[in-house]
Each structure stands twice: as C-alpha cells, then as structure tokens.
Amino acid sequence: MEKNVVFKEDNCKSCGLCVQVCPTNVIFLADYLNGKGYRPAAVIDQDNCISCAKCAQICPDSVVSVYRQVKVLETV
Image (tube, rainbow, N blue to C red; front, side, top):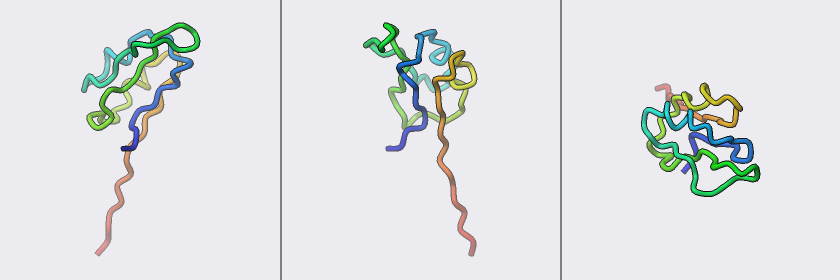
C-alpha cells in the first residue's frame, strides 16, 4: 500500500486542524507523543484517503505531504 498522506511527526504540534478538515475522517491524533511532547497527527486508513490536500493546506507548520497516484492512459 502506498501512502497518500505523510506527516512529519517530529514537527507536528497537535493543533488538530487537519483532523477537523478531513472530509473522509481518516486523520486522528496519535496516542503517543513525539519528541516535543505532542500527539502527532496520523492517518488511520490510507485506502480511504482521497488525497484532497485539505490537511496540507490548513497545516500552520507544513508537516503534511500529500501524494496522488499517477494515471497512465494507454493509446491504441
């Protein structure tokens, strides 16, 4: 499984904005702490992530990277 969304966990400050804007509700705050003492954001279900990038757009610390699958069209 390829990841659609990747968080730089060490830089996440647990603001929760990404959790609030996710239309598919696949982002949550982890139950562990990062090196700075915050609960980093994480994706619980990459398969249901639609790569809309709302989480990356709202993140004040730019800790979110969003990837989309490239579709290759075959010519006949």
